[in-house]
Length: 411
Image (cartoon, rainbow, N blue to C red):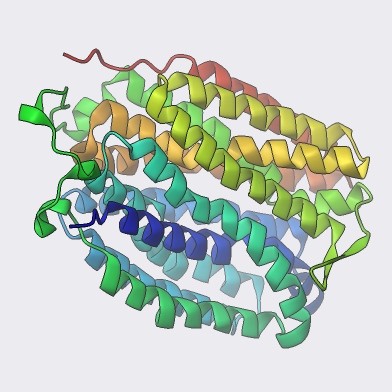
């Protein structure tokens, strides 16, 4: 019988594309329309993404622990329905507060139930030896959405309007993603007489971490090191990524190119190129995680992120700027699969949902701080120079923390 694990990976990739792409990567491209039509500001729109992580932090604790006990498939299906309702609701907003309330309630709940947390748990159920690669490939959907959706949404906005774009998003989730989950997702390989990685292991001779309580996890130094290292990486990433198209435009990347017959603005291309770097970063660092100690690929990715941030801050020559945006993406793209792989490697699949859930109140509050810092500073000046330098320094802090990730000795 053909191993079904890679089918789970491809389904996870599609879900990641849908959740992150519709919720985040498309959002900055829609900003100009929300600003001109509804009178919103850059700072306000940046705050939407920042505040989103507050309810997500709370929900992740509950959903993460539940995913270790109950059907991942059922959570994903319910989440898809809620997420579609949230996207459809966005087509009716008429104020900043209606936008914010939908992001913080319906979209937060739907995305956490069908997004990365659930996808990571599903893949952890199916993979062990090849977990790094599997998580990396699934997470390609996150960055690939950033490559494709801005290029698609930008001309689509002129054709159908931003409200109808959200109707299209909701329809995709309801009529494509929901059936995909129903027909492809299998919670555990044992239910179809298969084993992890498709490879039987003699007598379970390898080291298997024991099931841990929340208190035991919190008493582990390595849990805090992993959580804080990636918290600072996400903080740094969010403080730059959400504002990258606007920053690129202010740096002079305003030319319109013709790409495959489509008119693409240079600053939108820079945003997509960073996401394309993220696609490669997930593949490369997912593979490295399977062959190296966990600390090493994490440090490499974080250092690349810092390098890219400083590059786009100081250089406005288009080719150099675009190269730095790619390097930035190469680093931040690896963050999500590397973080999950670290928890999985050290605490095991049966503790993964709990570890990810409990880490959320540590990571999620720090994530929006980057957006808040950038949003506040841009309110005082018409440049991202100071804010982006601060974000680059936070990425270097993440490098130092990641160097302290220690794996348990295998017996």
